[in-house]
Image (tube, rainbow, N blue to C red):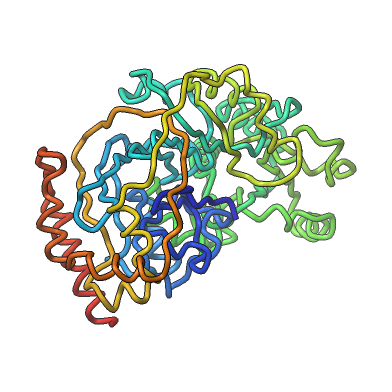
Length: 430
């Protein structure tokens, strides 16, 4: 699972292990690929923040209660409460990750400083045209997609890779084309639409993927009828010598694996199969693109999103780009400590009508802060009990959250309705 608990905060990203996140109150989802949703199920009871597209897919695939799923508009900054009263807030700015439909990156700014979480992303220079990134400021921690963080990982742009696929198809005008994918659920839709339009054919997909495509409202080029189209989608592991022999007995067939997975490796499992073509089409950043991204962002520290012991998890290759300015010291605000250590989620449900903190879609940017965390003294059980007794009721929290540091936080009608629905949902499930 590629997710993280953000230390000394009440939030996590792409992390769905409830037993390891008892003090986490806000959960963020970058996108819907399986390695970032592992652990989610219909029994999930915590608030989730994500893009609008991801919200639709999340509810459809995992049957998550809609009142728990809160959408954050891409390209905007949002204020979320980090405690029960709105005394402490953070700003979350959402960026398009250029990865798959609905995929986003998060910039968190609050008492902890500035944290940039890429999730999976394909770097594009246009990302720095966003006004928040264009106004150069300090990033204390960068959680970086290090999937292809190796000097050997060199591959073309997606436009170039798509043209390579078109050239292969053009050289086999009488063949059916099987396109191998890593995921049968979501990913590489733009490339498939481009192929369908270029070769004037339907793209055959599974019924499961068709349900996803309908939610994405893409051009009508997909079908589940295996006889309707020349191009069809399959999982990579289905492209085997045995299957190719069977497919070719029915019709001449050529397979194309659109993945950069084998880039930088010594060979691939399809070396001796002339009817299998590997095109390094990637929705992740290449090694060169990672360096360009980090050199422009200039964070103070980097943490790899993909854990492991390989060289791709070694972030020292970016040391020359790191900002070396002095770091500030911070402690967890007391109101946030109460929010985090209120008790287990189940006890919170018993004591409060709703565990979801207030949030607003107001654009707002807090000043960035360099940080070094100095842990506060551990709380004893009696202190935790007192915290539970001093936290105000949910309705009072909602009333106070309308103001932050003397500045009114505007609330959309939609967010207020969502809050009321969340309370009703919780009451019904107590």
